[in-house]
Image (tube, rainbow over all chains, first blue to last red; front, side, top):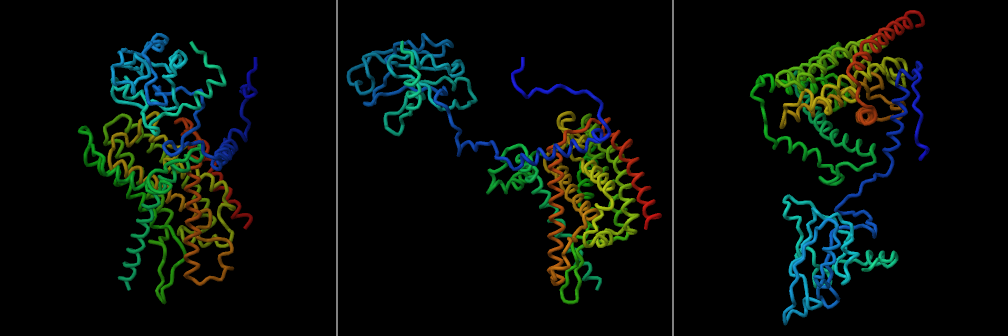
Length: 184
Length: 341
């Protein structure tokens, strides 16, 4: 079966006199390289330029807050249950008086950890979440020297309250609207 | 009078020394940029505008690196190896005529350090001493890879020097002189030797690649098989000297190719411009450097196109193809000069 037209039949015939000089071959090779000299470079100068990241890209997670600045997460545990890599650990707690501005419902996650070394970035936690809380963003997981630094707690996962600290997931939401996010 | 000659030559030597080093430094930058462009990349662009300060950063890094001399090595030879290599690389620049003489009143400032009447013999002699730098460096390291690299380098240099000499002999038959300035002046107008000696030029070019240890003849240092070849054990600025001398060699051999085969500082139509002698001299320098830069680019262009030879292929090419071909070339040139001229 032929998949592409790029395959070539190997020709093992003896080189003729001109070919055995190699010079024509070297010359044509040099023509090829000089053509590339004038082509546009494929490089993206990373910190200044960023390449286009598709809406389907699944990067580092974020725990969203609602418009009032309350955490959406209710520590229901569906994400942890659905996680095929068992990367999520949740400890739930009850909301106390005076904490209403922090948490959306009476129950919240006192601890929410994702082990980024176990996580396979499949996005099933996002599909499982009934509270519009966890989302996978276009951010790239940075490298680290210590293994324990890859266990991301609430300090790294929950977005900030201030508008400029919010993490935009509009593209991702739109992608789900167009492709019917399967809600649990 | 003697003092003025001494002064002239000292000034010229210092200028050429500085220019050689600067060009060698920027060849490393050029090499990386050319490599990048040939491979659809950008190349170094972080140090300074367009990465122009990259050679300075590299040089500084070399100076700051720890200097390691292996305990099993012969310390004296280990140090003297890169020195010889660098020295011979710089010495070859003495016989190259960089341009027409400059005139300051009645004083004539010749742009050639030494117009030796045996210039080409001097060139061959100094180039073959350069092989000792690599051999001594590789042997004194007391390392298998370095020794293999040095062995390869010496046998390669000996093999290719023969056909290089033969190619030059055919050229000498034409020019009737060993002085490089006379050879250059003979090519005035458009009588470039490359048109009279195309085969000789090809042989000389291939041998120049081999003498400079440039790809596709970079077997002495072949990174993928010999770690670093003869400079495996070297570190800090001694390694820098080896790498630097290689680029100076490239610069000088580009200069020699342009002088011997491409009319040196002459350019067709340079006389019809009606320039004053000094302006003509400046234009001639620019012309020579344009030719040199083209050949440096050519060296890099070939490096990033052609893969490395296998060792037996290298020897076969040197002994079985280039030497017979260059002898034939000498015979053909001699016959042509005897019977048709």
